[in-house]
Image (cartoon, rainbow, N blue to C red):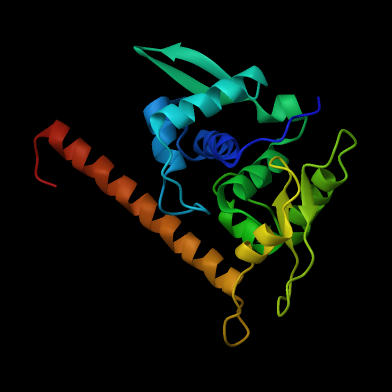
Length: 220
């Protein structure tokens, strides 16, 4: 099917659903509250958003009409799951790359491998590039594009096309700044994101330990 151009928030919703399916499967499908929190995360998101519940609900309505999401009733609240792979007819590896692009904006293949490793562990950068090229050469219409190399950059970045082709202004605004030495700003950002992810996992483990201690009646 030919998809219409989606909004930034609609792609953020899809990206969050794809991410949480793989990173927190015990709480997936997501409630509306969990989805809003995922859209507005301060880490692992570019740009950072402050979407309201009503705005996310409106995005869900649009995506439901395109069958990109499915709604189910779990307990007292509705829960939402993505349908990206079936609708777009792409493998899970490609869906993981698209989700990472939807959550963090344009990235190099190396950054995508690091930033998306919780959704899929690619053997090497060549594997990432292979799936990116498949997305770009998709017979039903490209879903990703390799961007022109920025001055001073060593690698080309990739962007998804679900929001349409990025404009020159958007490319300029999202271009990584040049850092000193042999390490690019994009590579530093990827490393920082990895540290943030690990910190998040530690916080989740601490919360789990505290919960278990409370249930057992012992001090954490």
